[in-house]
Each structure stands twice: as C-alpha cells, then as structure tokens.
Image (cartoon, rainbow, N blue to C red):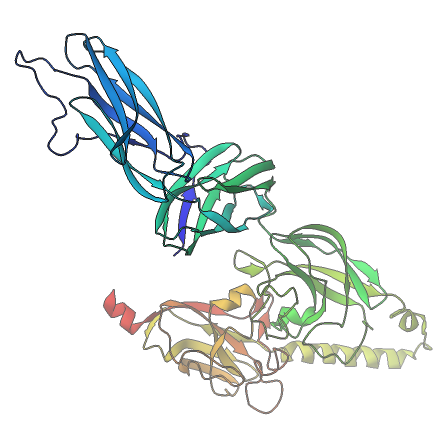
Length: 529
C-alpha cells in the first residue's frame, strides 16, 4: 500500500524516533498515594521519554520526569527496569513541590530482537512503554526529481524494506533544506516492502539548490533539488513578413509553456481546414522561449503533398502546438487532429500570420511585357473584367445558422434555422472545436441540403461518415456548435472528416467560419436537476 502526505515547507522540529508517554501508573498502582495526614508519601514518575525502537546491541537512553507532589523533603530510589529486570537505579532527593529529570541507559547487547516492556519506578509509582529491538528499515529504491519550477509539487517516492522476521513499525521522515517537514510511523510485515510517497509544495521556495532526503531509523538517502524560476504560462508566437526560398520559413519568436512544436499552415486554415492546412512543423521543442526557429516545409508526419516547395507568394500562419502524447513526435495530422493539438487563448488557437514572398516566383511574371492592346481591345477587356468581377462577387457562397439552447434526448439536436446559398450540410461540433480540433470535434451532420433556407432541422448525432465514436448519445449537458459546410466535391456526401478537412469546407464570412453555439441539456439530466 502506498501512503502520500502533502508537506509544508516550515514545520516545527521534534526529536526523531522518540515518544513521550504520559498516563496512569501500572494497573493496581495509584499514581498518587496519600499519607495519613493527607500529604503525598513518595516521589511520582510524571512521564518518560524513550525510543520506540532500537538496533539490537545498542545502548538505549530513557529520560524520566520525577516530581515530589508532597510538602516534605523526600529521598527515594528510582529504578529503570527492562523486561522486568532492574538495569539501572539512582537515589533522588526532592523538596516538596520540586521536580527533576533523571537519565538512564541500558545496554541491549544480550537481548534478542523482539518487543520488550520497560519503565521507570519509584517506591509507589511508575510509567512504562514498549521498546522494539529490530533492524532498521532499508531504502530499496529512491526516486526524486533533479529540478522543479518554483511553485510545483515535489514528489519523492521510496520503497522501504523490512529486514526483520516480524512485523515492525518505525518512523520514516522527510527532510528539506535542513528541516524535518514530515514524519510518519510505517508498519511493514516481516520480510515485506512498502512504497511511501512524500509530497512537498515548493510554493514560496526561492530558486536555488537544496538538499533533501528520506531517513529511516538508522539509514537514509540524500539528494539535491534545483528549484528554478517558473516558466512561461501562456503560449505566444511572432511570425514576420519574410522572403523564402520556398523550402523553409523562420518563426521570429516562440514561447511554449510546455513541450511542443510550432507548425506552419497555409491559408486554407482560414476556411476551417485545420488539419489539411499544415505544411510544416518544427523539431520537438522543450518548454521555453525561442528566437528565429527555422521550419522546413512539406515534411509533416502523416501528410501527403503534391509539391516539395512553395511556388507562389502568399499568407502563411504559424501556430504553437502542445506535445500531449509524450512521444516527442508531432502527431496532429496523423491522428486527424486528436493528438498534439494547438495551444489556445480564450478558447482560440494561438496564431500569427505573415506574408511569405517566394524568391523568384513572381519575377518572371513581372518582367513579361505584352504589346499594349488597341483602344477598342482595352475597352472590351475592361468591360469583360468588370463583368467577371461582378459575377464572382455575386457568386460568393453565403450561409447563416442559428442553434438555440434546447433540451435533447441525447441522440439528436435541432438547428433553429439555416441558409446555404450553394447547398451543402449543417455540421454539429462539440467543444473540441474551440481547441482547434476541426475534424475530431464533428459529432453530427445533416443530409445533403439543396441551396435554400431551412427551419427546425433535426440532425442525428454520432453518425458521421469517416468518424468513429465511443458513445452513441450525449450523456452530459454541454455546448454544441452548428456550422454550415459547402458541398465542393460534387458527390453530395459529407467528406470533411474522411478527407482530413480538405473537402466540403465550411462556409466563411469576414470573421471566419460561419457558426452559432447553443447549450444542449440532456433530458435525463434535466429531470435530475
């Protein structure tokens, strides 16, 4: 069994391995016996302080507090007995109302390991305790961190072994910076072992190097712990406009509050293509602040590309990602957005965009000069250009959606109203969308919708092409998000999840993907409330 204790940094120190016993005298013996005149007739043993365990063959020291509760000066013999036998004695003289401390020592050289009663006796009174002669617990394994950030929890795990052939209880203590901050009586069966965990809060501990350790009765282990300045708490990224050879870009500044990566997305991210837009990722980076991070493009685990370098200038987006699986390998694309997701702030991924100019990409186009057209041709071309621009503006797809707060049986939700100028679908996302998981957050999708407006549209949940789920219905109240998607693959089948976000993208407006959120209460929970 494993015991865990939360420690404070400052605790009062007490004598390790000692126990103070106060109580009544032995059965049948009155602690204070009165003389006929009402005065106490002898000395009284108020308390004894003695170790609860010791190594066989060692010398045991017992300290007794002896008082004279009477009014007359009294001299009396005080004895120390171990296992019933007198091993030490002394004469004590006290005036009335006085007290004194008496010290005894006993050699256990001829005693076998085991449990013994011992005590200090006057002529009329005594106090007793138990002494266990045993080998000290041994530390078989000691596991402690080398460093922590100030404010973090320090966890020290030890495996203790009992070398004795009988069950034994001994004190085990944890020390930090010269002070004992925790002590616990541990009981272990004969020949057995037990794991014990000590936790120390480093809140308020100044950065520096400290000695700490775990001590058994006669042994122990020490280590050094470096307390460092706290690291960053929020992610940030700065990505400046730059010129590139088409194979790499440079992120100017990056702050990671925990280990992770910085990824480069193309501008399809702005249309909701979170996974398919990843075109570059840095090496694995430990928590910290970085300058001028070079990112190679078109080498992303789990992604397939039709190109090996940028051929056109355009907008790219840098996004810090968190290492969530512990394997130090970027798995966001390969897991379809499940692993190693982006760092967020206020529910949105942390990003910065830059205009990346590809060296030489536009020079040829700029240098090519055609003969100027005739005046009539110029006018005709301008008219054609204006008509094209007008048609393109008119043809821009638009959508709107409303998802009101509602109660659901857990298997479906109702979209209050939706309009899709080019047809498509209404998709339901869970709150994973707010963490940047555009595909893995999809929990429902409508049938294909022809262009038009729809009211009170019911959408079945957990039935999405290309998605697998661990549940078949909602079991908790939560916020869901409705998002209209285009049909851009021409097959009238929702392909956004199966394509990793590259097909059937969301409708967008000036602010990004068109969405509306609603609070969905599961009927069973509403009844319980």
